[in-house]
Length: 422
Image (cartoon, rainbow, N blue to C red):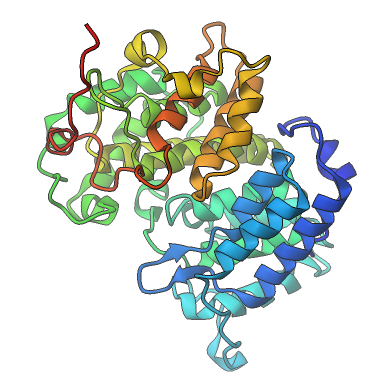
């Protein structure tokens, strides 16, 4: 199920892989993915719903040409904190339609989707399995739950042509938490008419909409999305999501800007943990959309992903997006400028592979992917943005993601001002 084939994933024209991926590394990655599948639970901390990122880290590193030795080191570090995969429940106690949202049935869903994939209906075709469950069996809101993790998992499955990852991704969707179905299921995804606004135009409207002011505040418990929905934020999110004119370039760029453009002048760069997931999942929007046979389903997925991005944008404090400052005024540190490098991307990638937090690597990879596939005339300076991300997250032992909510002034008051060089 986890045997990767260089020929299969290299032939796909909607992925971005660095040259130098060795056959030995591909075999090592396959073996480690299989071990993770057989031994470990979906969550490494079950009460908190903290996801096992072993597979994501391995495949992101492989995509950047990591060696077998590097992949083994990644696996060893993740294994230290994982929870064992629980035994299967009694068959009579498991109903795939009634056990949704209960992580004690994760193993049962793994077996269920394994059997579904090889059934006569799907005949081993993971693309057909994913599309059918997402759009015909109510999983669209589920794959975007849990801070996008099932969506990301399925994206890796399609990118690297891994049936095992597809099984895991659907099982993850079945039992994950932080549910966004309240937003996704109420958008009129079947509407033939689209809105007429760009994503950034909609975000600016949301920033100035005072109806959100009391729905979520800085002191609310994180990750804040459930509280926002409990207080009636869903219908407002839906209202704005319907205004969007669907466009893949616009969706990808905005999934990046809601994260990286939240930095502020005169402050060291800081990046929000949950908005970062809008960026890392944005890499896979193109891949999943292009795997779908139905044009209508492609449009539905784009709308649902955009609505989820808006949900997290509001839940993290509706940060002002300082796009001009990011693109034109922000000064990259000398450490990450790589002015002497023939190709700064390569030096940057080599360093990001050393960071113990896989989210750094995944973010850099999403930016490199965007640089390759952004067809807009005014493309973003993706290399500079990647350098800013490195500034924000190195050195690894003394920096990290913002958990409190990056849109609130209360958070930024805790960050010291930059010392002027003048």
